[in-house]
Image (cartoon, rainbow, N blue to C red):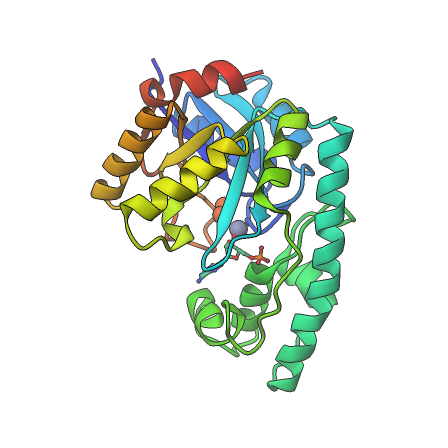
Length: 284
Ligand code: AMP
Ligand code: ZN
Ligand code: FE
Ligand code: FE
């Protein structure tokens, strides 16, 4: 009997540092019942992950994480159980990557003006493992290059000093409105999950309630109840909110590989029993 799952994981297809196949093999070693690959704005890792999972016991769930527009905080929509061949979703993600390709050189130029010499070429090589038009390059890659070149002591410091919202090298990127992000997930047959609710920076539980109700009105299917950043109290509150609004319960580690050691694959433990309804929908 396998009792736990991890439904939020990144690979080198975006800003993780393990290959999609390695991610799946780690999930197998941890004896997880199911694992979802949820790279930012790309489906590029899903084929390799699915092939790796084919002869293993872990159930592989194809996923994606999409940043949506939200004032005052960060709103990420995770799509679980998506069909990677869906043309609508593919096109939406291609557009988001085009936006990133406009933003990256602007952030590099700002870093240069601040005295840090980093190039697109270095981001592609130091930062990323999968190359090509479908791989996503973002701020975490920049943070790793700044670290490797000794400009900062840690990824955390890179965000705090230069790359974070409102810091001197930050450039915002064009995002989808939340309803569009959820529609793209639905077009591909997936369930739309609100990731890490604390990142919304809501002031109190009634504000959170309003935000989530409005997302439900626009198509939200589920809530990420379990995440390493959640306190036990938050986890209980999100579980309660999901029950009250009839939302699917999800959860995962937001694992990015050994380069971001705060997150470990399979932690926190997400009980299969808690996510049963979601698995019934998302496991191919
Ligand atoms: P981007 O999508 O390019 O704007 O980059 C966002 C990603 O950078 C997030 O998904 C995280 O992986 C990472 N990130 C954002 N803020 C921080 C932070 N303060 N410390 C470490 N990683 C971060
Ligand atoms: Zn990330
Ligand atoms: Fe996220
Ligand atoms: Fe994530």
